[in-house]
Image (cartoon, rainbow, N blue to C red; front, side):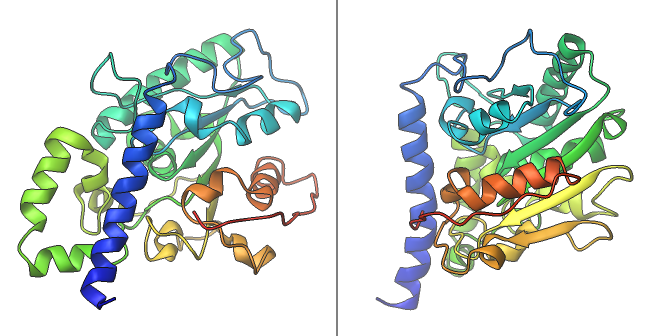
Length: 291
């Protein structure tokens, strides 16, 4: 296989994965509870876990598809857990994460207000995958008043500094295909998929000035085998106080890719440790497969 073929394959894989998630999620109502214990609006935070956890899914999927593992685990550990489907463009299509980053940020902000009102909590914790991880960092910086109401941000494979889709963008540029491809994606298919590219407008906006906000604990989790947020270290923030963690630091043989972060015992343990740093928790390595 030639280098050009590998580059095209890399971006094609990302598109195919997104399309698969789109097709699967269309079969499940976005309004449905993602899984047992989530979106219980009668839940009241306990003294042990006073902050509700809000889970933010990635691009071209929804809450139901993204959180069947992490959501129930958090609920079983005593957290009030909420998971919106955000960023949809067509009400009849139960797929989120396709509208513009800034528009979704305001939508998520309104959802957080609902969580505050229902739970009477002072703060929430945000856990986001991919685009959701980017939104979890974007919101406290750009939505007025939200930084002081967020305790922890835990990000899984978020393209904080812009993805090059396994360097496929360079090939598109060489073939003069990037502008038309970006236009079609941004206007018709998946706006954040373009905004979070290397050099994308939302990436440039986030990188202007300090990314993090005082008073928030940030934990950025990534896998070295990520095929969508590439190179993998774009998921990290090199600012004081930020914890940047590769899954492979704890589990060297872990082969999990971008979607594999959502079903990974080590990631689950790292999330629980980040949300409750006073509770020392062993990080267990489990069976992992590429993807």
